[in-house]
Each structure stands twice: as structure tokens, then as C-alpha cells.
Length: 191
Image 1 (cartoon, helix red, strand yellow):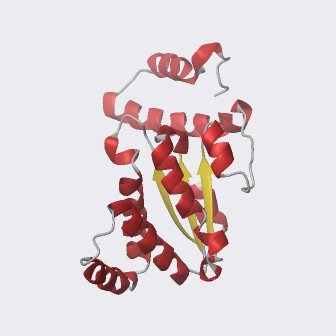
Image 2: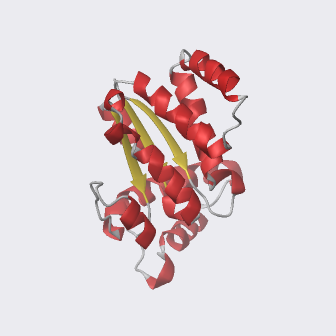
């Protein structure tokens, strides 16, 4: 989706984060928020002045990290007319972290100056996320919707592996077939 947005809407700035539950740097709100802030700073270095001033002013009241990060995101997102934020695999985070992330997702709807910001999230269905994001527009993605993307990714990675390890054509096909077999007993993808 990130590549598609970037290719079809070149005037839109895009940032993203991929959550992963077995990686502590990819599943906690503070790490997600810090990463998003860093990407925003790369797009708009002028936000650094605000963050610097905010952190200096905040030293006295020592707000919790999560609260401070939410305030920073709330403010710096107002400086963007056309920004898309993607958060992939939100279900990989704990319920507590998902609740904090839902506050970031709500920024464009509650802040008039952040209306040019769009946020999309991918996740498996989780009851707490359904409640947290009940007003969001939802698309139910089925496995058949992913086949083209998975196949493209596998083809790209196989070309890289074949170049690195000099696979025979037969071995490449065997590996591709094994990888393309869906988990949980599904049918293989078409390659």
C-alpha cells in the first residue's frame, strides 16, 4: 500500500511503521511514536524547533513518555497538508499499546489543523481494536486479495537469493513452491 500511495500520489508524503510482537522495538507505543516522529522530522526538519522547545518546557512537569510523545505528534501533525501514515500489524501490539496508538489515529479527526493527515492501519480482527476504531472506515482483506503482493514479494526475494546462492532452476522452483504454500493448510499461491 505504501508503494502504491507513493507511486500514484507523488505529492503526498508517506511514513509507516511495521509492528512485530516478538521485537520489543517494534511493538511498544513509545517506539512506534518515536519512529513516526523521526520520519516526520526527515520530511519536515522545521518540526525540530517545536520539539526542542516542547522538551525544554516539559522538563519541569515531567510528563510520562507516552503522554509527551502523544502531545508532540498532536502538534507536529498539524504542520502537514498531505501526509499518509501507515501502521501495519497493529494486532502485534499489546492492548495497552493499541489503546495509545488509537489516540494517534484519532488526531486528524479531533484536530482541525491536522485534517490533511490520513492514517491507515492493518490488523487482524481484535475486539479491543473494533471498539477503539469503531468510527473508522474498514476494509476486510481476504487471502485472495494478498496473492499478487505475496507473489511479487516472493519473486523479488527469490531473484536476490538465486543471485547470492546460485540456485539451479529446479531448486528455485522447489523453494518458491514451498514458500508459496499457504500456512494453515491453504492452497498454494499461483506464481
